[in-house]
Image 1 (cartoon, one colour):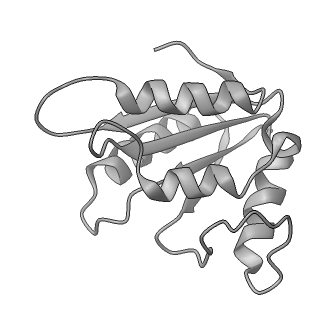
Image 2: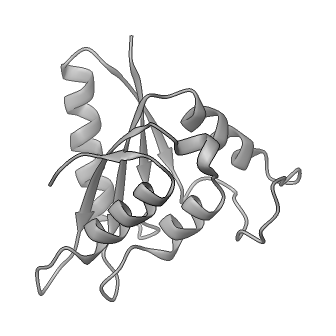
Length: 137
């Protein structure tokens, strides 16, 4: 059975992004897949400092292990000021090529107000840099 990590990158309590991710997770499960929720607001992860090891933060190793052993993942971020959330950027910064290379990535972004797709583009750019494959919009 395929397991798909679903990463929520919003810290807001009543997050629309989180709700959208839960809908995607439910669809994975309805199709017979297994989805594992990685809610970054409940995990203890540090700001990336460029180190490859974070021994005081076991959630970093947990994230890396789950991502490394998955074939695909779903990312969901709000769009803040025309880009992804800082939480998602930090998540990416804690990963390396070895974690995301050849992974299939679906991304969901949610924003209020003026509609655009800067967060989608930012996620795509980062994933391409890390040699992941991003699903088309």
